[in-house]
Every structure is written in C-alpha cells, then in structure tokens.
Amino acid sequence: MSDHQLDRYDLRILAELQHDATISNQELAERIGLSPSPCSRRVKQLEESGYILRQVTLLNPARLGLKLTAFVLIGMDRHTPERFAGFEKVIRDCPEVLDCCLVTGMDADYQLRVVVPDMEHYQQFLLGKLTRIEGVSSVRSSFMLNQVISTTELPLTHIGQ
Image 1 (cartoon, rainbow, N blue to C red):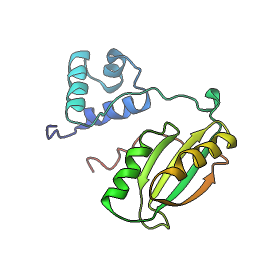
Image 2 (image 1 turned 90 degrees about the vertical axis):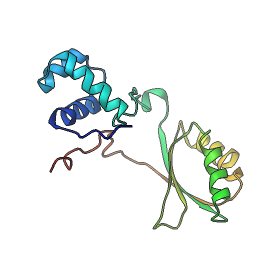
Image 3 (image 1 turned 180 degrees about the horizontal axis):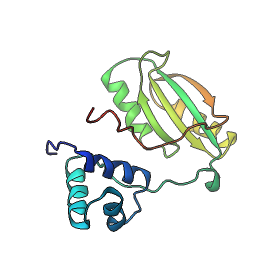
Image 4 (image 1 turned 90 degrees about the horizontal axis):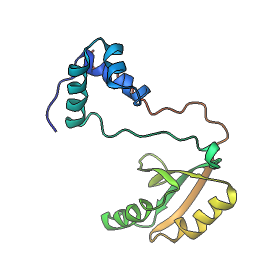
C-alpha cells in the first residue's frame, strides 16, 4: 500500500461509493466534479492504497428469512494466544457469525453478532457449534428487538480538519 494523501475529491469519491458502489464511473465523476478518466484513476489509486477494501452487495436479512439477531458474549477458560487462535479459527467458519470482536472492558473475551432464521436455529448454533469450541467457558446471549441504526458507511468528517 502506498502512502496516499486524501484530498477533497478522494473524500467525495469515498463518500459516494460508500453510499452506493453500483453507480457508474460516469455518474461518480459527475457527482464529484471530475471527468471520467481522472475519476477512474483516483478510484484505482484508492483501491491500491488500501482505502477501498472491496465492494459488496448488502442483502435484506428479513427477506432471506434471517429474522433473529443475537449479540453473544463469549468467555474463554484460558487467556493464551493458542486458545484465542483456536477459537478464532473455528469461528471464522461459522456463516451465522457476521462479526467477531476480541473485546476489553466487559465480562467477556469476545463479542459476536449472529444472524439466524429463528430461536430453534440459534439453539442449534449455540449447542451444536459454539459451546463445543475448545476453551469456551461462558456464553451470554442478547437478542435484537429493533434495529434503530444500521449503516456500513464510515464517518469521513474528521479527515482534513
């Protein structure tokens, strides 16, 4: 990754692509006030510099029958690099887990965000996978009632101030 300094055009490109990555280069160029060729070069540079990791399509979980979101706190029996590495290796292969974060300041070692169709599927995930991972000593689950905010857009307002 090169050490690329972001200017106002780069920031506008990032903001527009975060909002809708499906827009054409022509539309992006018009929105930020550049011609298409320089706009395309800037997007490529932002990718090569590591600012743009990848582009994805966001799916509607409810339309896919994924109606239950659980936030799960995991406690580990030992705090060793090997124990954590083993847990992380197994959890990476669980498609139900959308986020797994090593955390501090809580009575847990990991926080997961898990999406499944219903409580029956969550129970299968919990008892059939999660509690069987070597080193897991405690599991505490909370369930989402209503999603007030959901975004993938990172704040960019702090850059260039």
